[in-house]
Image (cartoon, rainbow, N blue to C red; front, side, top):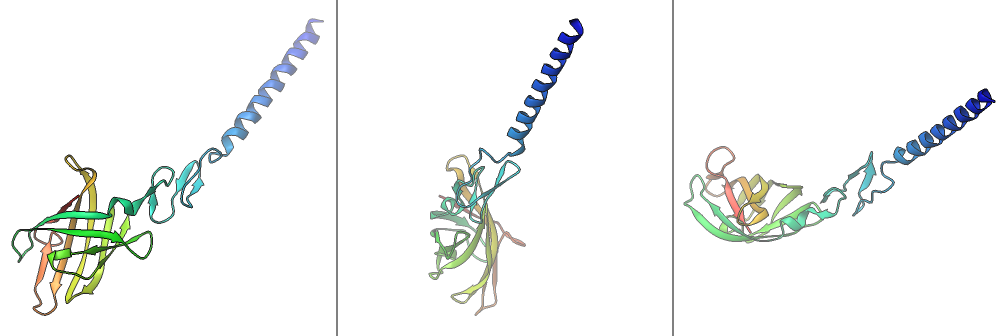
Length: 179
């Protein structure tokens, strides 16, 4: 009788262990089961892979919203004096493109930029007789808060005079933009 009870106990134990193991494995094998990614993001191995122009743990942040608006610019170029002015960043052709209006305090036509998370790229382009290119990075600023300051390093070449104003690309100081 003891041997039979032992056999039943062992059989029950192993059956329960097998059931728990299968249940645990099946619940954890799909790490994306309970994850919802916004704006067309796709879950892979328990993390969202965001579509271009979106970020965040569940792709819930529209990247370009951080940039849109009026920025106060403080800059001193390699051949221009210290200058302070406002410019506007607005939506561009798609979720990763935007335009700057009022760059260099006198360029009225839009300057195209690409955004990628907390970084911008000003691809080389000619606007209003100036050849422009550069990069920028958003950062936390104690007064303005998260994404309150954009440090931009760019060059602008006046095609009529041939002079290049450098804002921290090779020489000079980076341009500081705050909201």
